[in-house]
Image (cartoon, rainbow, N blue to C red; front, side, top):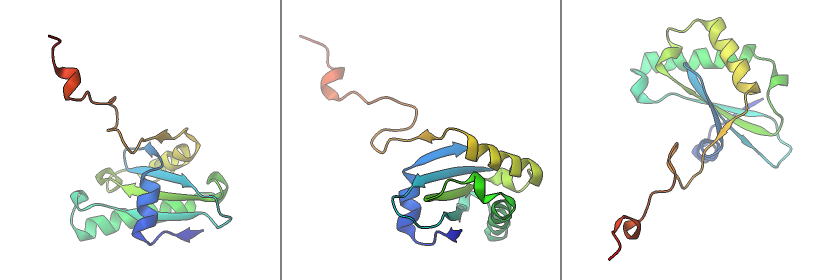
Length: 130
């Protein structure tokens, strides 16, 4: 298992499927090459100061270490996006959440549309007929 380190790889995975959990979001993307499973970790600044973000990141890395690689799909990239609840959530519960996230059918997002909404009507659709 390798690590994702380049921004372009993180952005590519962000456009893929995602599974939500209280402590993290699991993003995944299938690759067409025969390389190993790659995984990346990210925690945004809204989750706290640097020591808190580092603690979230360390907990996420430890979750992946304790998880069976068999539960991950080969030739995939994964990104774990940490949430603030990862600081206070029980570690065994988070491990169960991660196992479930790998077995859940992933929710796909479309690049052109906002999540949860249909297409927005244009200006012609909002005018009344004469």
